Amino acid sequence: MYDDCLLLSTRFPQKLWRIVNDCTSGAISWSNNGGSILLDYKKFHNEYLDPNNSIFKTSNVTSFIRQLNLYGFRKVTSHSRDPQCNSRNPDVHEFIHENFQREHDELLKKVCRKASRKCRKDVKRKNGEQSTSRLKMCQFALTKALEQAVEDYRRRKLHQEVINVNVKPFCPSSSHLQGYNYFH
Image: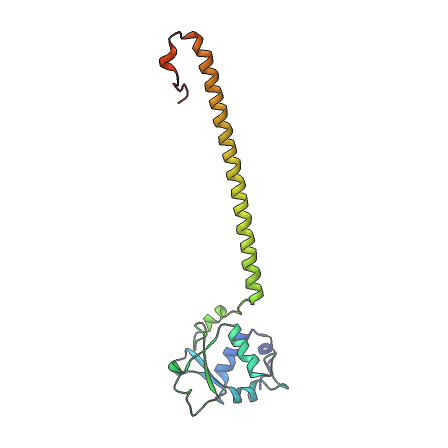
């Protein structure tokens, strides 16, 4: 088994990549097209999840599958399964991830653990709070701008009235000028 300390300290996708490429027993292997992995639950449990020599943090196949799911792997349904997964071999299951492919180790950096539901909820809540805060700031700015516009309108109207009152004595026949706006 793997006594390599380097393997024990690597991220889950890199460990999985190395095991898929090194395994010769059929416990885990690439599908025929190299776009998915085939996992024989019984063999994999016996070889890689042994509590005394496990390179993963679990000795339980179900927990290992949960880990696959957390990293975005999906179990392939029966209608599109690899020919090696058939009714004669019910322990073999196929898992796929678009960035986990044979001979493309450069894609491994894109295989990341999904955020937890709580984390996603917190992010949504924070984004919502930020949006609300931005909306309140915009509302405040618009209210201030509207108040300023109303105040400017009142000042101009008052100024216009003062001018009309002051001009009237100088124009005895100013009836034709009434209502004329001196400010364009």
